[in-house]
Amino acid sequence: MKDYLATVVKNERIAENIYEITFQTEEDVPVRAGQFGDISVGGTHLLRRPIAICKAEGNLVTYCYQIKGEGTQKLKTVRAGEQLNVLMPLGNGFFVEEKEQKVALVGGGVGVFPLISVLRAYGKEKEISAYIGYRNKDAVCGVDEFEKATKFVGVTDDGSWGEKMNSVQAFAKDLQAGNRPDVVLACGPTPMLRALKRLVEEEKLACYVSLEERMGCGIGACLVCVCNLTNGARARVCKDGPVFNVNDVAL
Amino acid sequence: MANLSVKICGVTLKNPVIGASGTFGFGREFNELYDIGTLGGVSTKGLTLEPRFGNPVPRIAESRGVILNAVGLQNPGVEHFIEHDLEWLKNTGTCVIANVAGKTLDDYYQICAKLDGKVDMIELNISCPNVKSGGMAFGIKPDTVEEVTRYAKNGAKNTPLIVKLSPNVESIAENARRAELGGADCVSLINTLTGMAIDIERRRPIIANNTGGVSGAGVKPIAVRMVYEVAQAVKIPVIGMGGITCAEDAIEFLMAGASAVQVGTANFTDPFAMPKIIQGLHTWCDKHGVADVNELVGTLQLNEK
Image: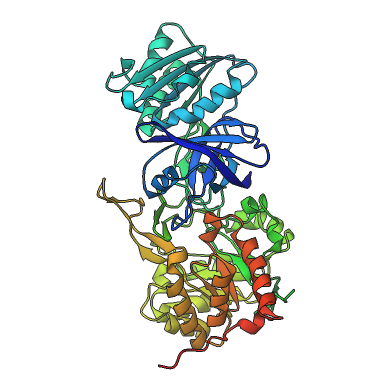
């Protein structure tokens, strides 16, 4: 990890309330799939914004973010050529083992973006099926990336694009049809992850989930962003995660 | 280059810049970014006799110019710290300040006794606003401030004792005097101010604990005023903190009467905040012909009214 003074190359809207920002750094950033960065938006905002890395190639790092509050509103107004401090890469990321050939990606909402980084990292060597859920057709984004997967099932909550179901239901349906992965990698809202946890427990599938929590330092020092583990202990989402074995976390 | 080293209660710090408790863990994470041995000191995450899990999440919120937190003293317990982190932290070369909290007077005695002689200084947290049993019960009334200090000092016989004062009180200067009377070797201030931030869509406080401790740039003027008042009230050294973001902020605290400063929230905004403050102190002193940073302490002159 390093604090980069990164130059914005582009920052544009890609779906309703979703923006994509690409930074250029002086040197290459060694990013693993599923890691995140802590972006300083400056001004009266004392906390940085922890956001998952969507794509990283050499010295270009792309993040996608949802407009949620004043900080992301401000980030939205940043123009190409401006510089921001970005502390990255942070967290552990997703690992896909050698023996895990068939990978299922299950994502919902802004949770779809770290999964794009998995697809980019492992797309060539693995057989990847992506089950991606959006709220409605206006929220659909990243499709050009997911279409590069071996199989892509895109769905919406209201059926305005793709079938009307959520990403876990889409995954379950394909599972019943016999498409069984060696490992499931997921990111999305907690209710979605909870449903997925039940499913993979029943099906006895290996599964890793990327969690989200309000953070302080982003590097593991302040103990702000903890999650509960099934063994009763607490782990730091930023440092011990954000990716956890689904069996280890209490959702 | 100006001399930045300061001596507090017989302990020499390389410079007057200390990482504030709760923002810096035991130093390991920030040491991945820079050598924390270059800092004047590190005040550890608040330690208790037993391990604590802390409060539910969310534990943090932001408001313009400040943040609110309610971590709730999550820590692995003092024994774990002594066994796993203390030696490492000492070896970095920074001054080790163990921040401690307890539920009872005897807790404070015991935890200080356990750390006595093992750390450079002990900082008494009697002002954590986020847990019922985080010492706040002792930190509000002057009588209990004096009493808990006496118990703690009895444990910390051979280690300088810093009492960290709460700003959520009637008179912080009076509490500082009473800490001094109870045997404190030093006082530090301010701990966070109790506050609340509301998510208006959910009509609920953002932080699970409902209220949290307010810190960051926005609290600085309050902290400077309180440091000035306390420095006037006691003879023991004062460590100032509250919203320090840059060297100029640190100098305000020194002029108001602090012998050293702690930096907390700024570490979140910029993980290199403290090395930059130290560098900035050098630059400022050189530019102003100040040969020794100690020359600045307590040099504030009030306007005539």
